[in-house]
Length: 165
Image 1 (tube, rainbow, N blue to C red):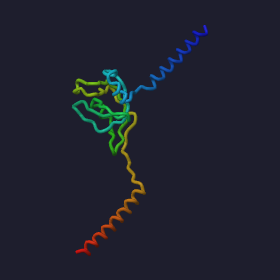
Image 2 (image 1 turned 45 degrees about the horizontal axis):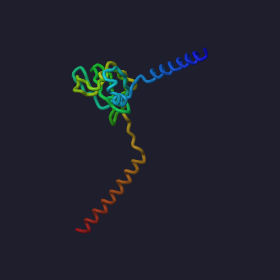
Image 3 (image 1 turned 90 degrees about the horizontal axis):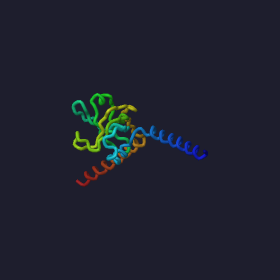
């Protein structure tokens, strides 16, 4: 009887650990997606990351790129979902952070064999913003000093040329 209780307790603990792990990782990293493309082909999954670049609009659809820090991938999305997006990441902007659920294709026949995700839902997790660039006081002072030195060298050079001719 004691052994059966231990087995039941073990099964319950194992079940809770399994359930917690299933809910803890509801998104997949894009790098894992690429590494396991064959086994995940034609499955519905969720990715999360920053929108980068710009939308490439194609009639009622568009292509967007999502970067989660491990890698980036293309997502085929409806034009109506594109209208929800405000910022795409680049040097001057932090892109919107999105959660995208859709069907993953290792080799999409509709798009020339490319790896892509066909979006079925898009959720904006965090809005992007304009990156504020601040130049440090040290850099400004250093630039002024270098300008003064370069100006003095130019003056000396011009005086030497006049004295030669």
